[in-house]
Image (tube, rainbow, N blue to C red; front, side, top):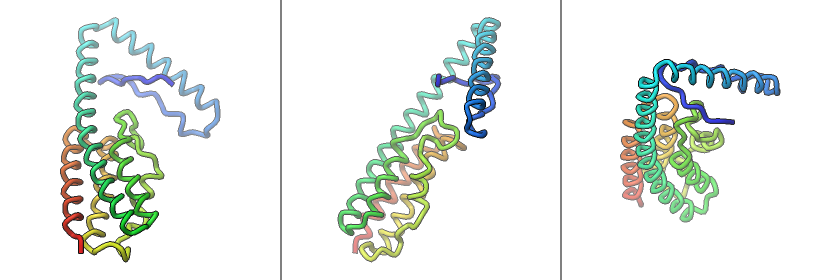
Amino acid sequence: MTNVTYLPGDPYPDDRRQGDGGDAGLALFAADRAAFADARVARARQDPAGFAEADRAVAQQRARVAAAAVLAAAAAGRAAVWVAELAARTGRRQVAEYAAAVLACGRDLDDEDHVDGGVPEEVTRVLSGAVLLDDPGLTPGEGLALVAVGAIALAMPRSITAGDPVRQLPELARHLDRAVSAGRSAVG
């Protein structure tokens, strides 16, 4: 499927992929996207300067989002290392899965995925499920920090889908680093 950039004023085609899952819905969706692309070309012919300016603005915003996503991915990577260290110490598979989910929340961010932010539902389930607060191998402070890391990691893809990722992702990255720092200092 072709990636289409939506610009201000562009009509959004219905997302028929959410329908019955049949080929008819996909064919209608493809027809909507083709009509959308035709309308976009017509707009470009009517106002080439305005269209070019809108394209530049979209490219600049994408670059800002990409830079913020790099910061978030780095913080998620650092947090995942700490959680993996906890997993190695406790020998708990659930903690190792938690580490992988934290990493995925930063690594898989996708500003074009307006449903999940690029993070699959399985990852969300791991981080929002049993949080391992009472794990016998963790101190209470580590358990609390682990909960904070999961919550902050889950907020990253949500900033893509429903927030302001340019502002929120760097802030979430700082909070993630603080939660890891608190967890590291909570060792019994």
